[in-house]
Length: 383
Ligand SMILES: *Cc1c(COP(=O)(O)O)cnc(C)c1O
Image (cartoon, rainbow, N blue to C red; front, side, top):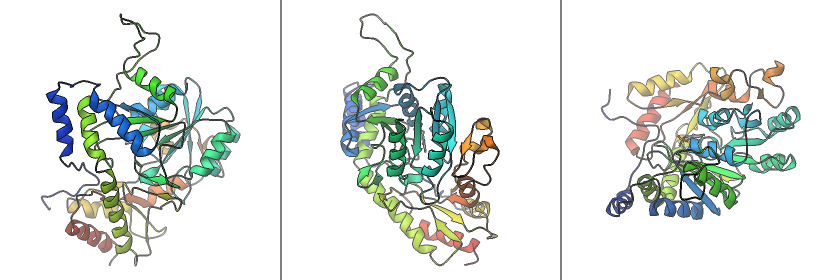
């Protein structure tokens, strides 16, 4: 087995990060507040083209505070993409609200507007929608926004995977009432761990920052009229983020080049389809993924095993939330049926999960690494 491991998506540092960290040390701003935190918020807001931002300890914390600031609480129904990472929907359950999972469409793999429409028919009192831009591909935002607006329900965008992706020229994360980004270690830029909540509404970001800093009322003594959290980003990690942000567009270009290279390399293998792009968007191609044609004898496991044998990391598609044991009791809505009505059948998200995998998409892959990955995948198909 090769000594060098090829990763799915690992951190890529540049140098400026250390400068910002050094400044923080030199000025002793080693705290969950400070000049890097304020500057990172401003720089992220400027980059994404949105008015306000609140820097937090994780993307998950940002989703949690998005729900809190919108007043989501016990018993409220939240309509959420099923094909995603569990961090999207765990915070709904933190608040004792009720997730209802929505199936994907095939064009972008994201929330199916037709299924969302059906979900509103069944749950007319739903209080919020959380849409995910999976693997960096923007969802059908026009359709989803139209439905949310018609039902007067706020949209939360989980743009954890899609920072730098745009839809009709505007950044994902800036369409909903609240948007969230993640800077976890495997995301397109990282602070080792961190997140950001963004909104056009300053009331929302102010409230998020307030709740993230233990909800201290303005008083000399420690006075509290809300339950608070310790969710603020530290001035050290914000320094890493400022350095990374300088290279975000460069990372995006490299991720897109990886996707293009896979696309070209597998063009003659009709059994392989890469994850879809949205023609109305410009995706960051955070992870390049593929599905295998129905009826083909090659399975995702066979490809993942062949790669792992050469010390190359790959991963299944996210297992849909409606198939997770922990979320078993919750409803799932497809374009044609509903789990609780006993007629969900085979859903689009389950089908993608069953036939798909994520390919190594690390921007530090050398041309030789890419050739090796491609050779191994092609061999699985007898090419
Ligand atoms: C990574 C991720 C999150 C969570 O972000 P953290 O910063 O790891 O808490 C949420 N949603 C999706 C879709 C993600 O991929």
